[in-house]
Image 1: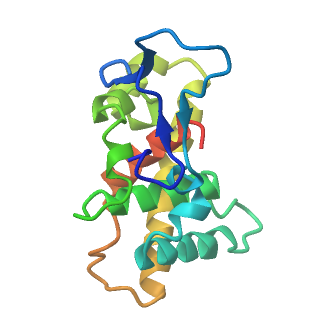
Image 2: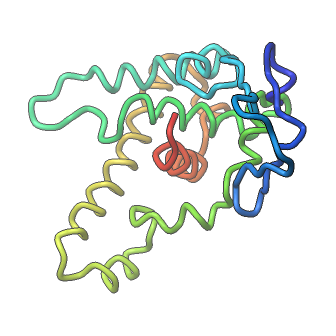
Length: 187
């Protein structure tokens, strides 16, 4: 996928270990030898992702509408706007047969690794592990904020005239998975 992009290159001595998600060097190389060159078209960024489809553009517009809502009491979005856009675009693209980002998504860890993030824990686990600390309040706010972000953006999506069945709008679970991926990596 990286090599198929204009200017992409992976040194023949570089391999990817899917289990540990590591790049490994299997042979000696010369000083200053290039090992990996990733073209900008393969970098996962909001700017590139919003160009990928009409759905991606509408998701971006929906998020911007929510982010720019005027409220004197609360922030319009709980999570970072760019993280939310990217997470929703990745979540929406997962079910597409011609998903441009599929090779990248296949390198991500399984869903179970995202379930280690406290905002994804069941209430009983939260109470068992965090009762008595001020972390429980932060985690509950994060969980509530993420749900509110999703619901408000889905409403904005519908307000833009997208179908009421939300066929192209990702499920909350897919969004939550991709938000966990995006916020636990550098983009």
